[in-house]
Image (cartoon, rainbow, N blue to C red; front, side, top):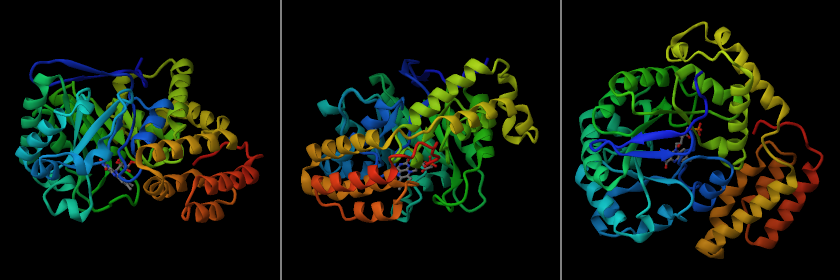
Length: 392
Ligand SMILES: Cc1cc2nc3c(=O)[nH]c(=O)nc-3n(C[C@H](O)[C@H](O)[C@H](O)COP(=O)(O)O)c2cc1C
């Protein structure tokens, strides 16, 4: 039986040490949103691993300090968190890692992720982010050198990549194969090209191809599927259509951290009720036209789970969660800064709610906890009878 939900072992490259991650449903890094309080909340709701937003290796290396990035790198010692760096020069990564690892706060960090997918022009024009997909040798060198540095310290190097760079490119299979030869411990594949940014739909077929390529090169390297997972059905589909080892959820977790509990419960339900999941078929599913028929039973269980179990709890619990998140952010960053940044964190909580436009409008101008309480009072009042399953 193919285990949809299982712990993951990341084997570090040269000395073969192993790092254990409790499970295979991860929170994606989302710049501007996945700060420590949000990562902690996702972990409490079932995310097995979280990741900081991208932080510049060059800036840390050049200033010799993490001060400018400290607030993005924050950790509480209990939330499993990978640190994500972007850059284009191997030496800058090594210097940045040295500096980060001298800080007590980060000594427990075991996973360092290299961003190879950021589409933003400011990043790409420096040769970093998704631009690394145009230079596989450079990407492989960065992985090799950081792995050589980190492995003796018991740390792993992972990477997050895309389908390709230009519109229509599908270079991810060859690219990930190259990384799998270079000491990488896990690879997340987002099924969009850089040209797509975040628009259109993620291509699941290219993730299946990357899984096959990596598995044939080094079966110990897990591949994590990412892109457009927003409920149990899309999570199950990602596993079944690609044969991936784990999944990563980004936008659907913003304002909806309960998605992790929901997806994991649905996967457990599938495991309980469907007895004939055949893993020998799974790895070829990305290109298999009979996919829907072959896995109809599993997808039906996932779809029924979505239908029968609202992802989002009742409005009172949502409000409580929001208030706690706000207070956590204020505690870390002070009233002024936290309130400004919280507006952005708050908006997605009102996605697909009644009075969404009004609530979002008020959220965008939030200035104090008292005002937040008023907004949440309106939210609860207008949504309190809303027990319908939600697909936020
Ligand atoms: C606003 C925004 C910021 C993002 N920031 C990062 C980042 O810092 N590092 C990264 O690797 N990916 C970043 N991503 C990409 C996500 O991690 C993820 O790959 C993408 O959103 C697709 O997954 P999803 O459909 O589950 O959201 C970002 C995406 C968005 C929309």
